[in-house]
Length: 82
Image (tube, rainbow, N blue to C red; front, side, top):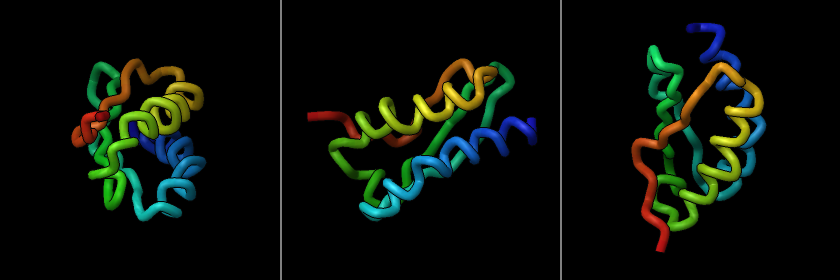
């Protein structure tokens, strides 16, 4: 599981600079036994109305592409889109 976390973090590092430019970030909370990654959006990302798009098109895509063992990606604190 440690190897998976490292690979997920590497995938997120490819997206983090874009999040940080706007005052946000992301943290891996856990990877479950059924290979679900649970993320927490931090800073500006936690309250941004565009966070659901950032999550789907950026974070989720980067993780699923780089770590094919992962079956699902969830964000624990997504702001609903308007």
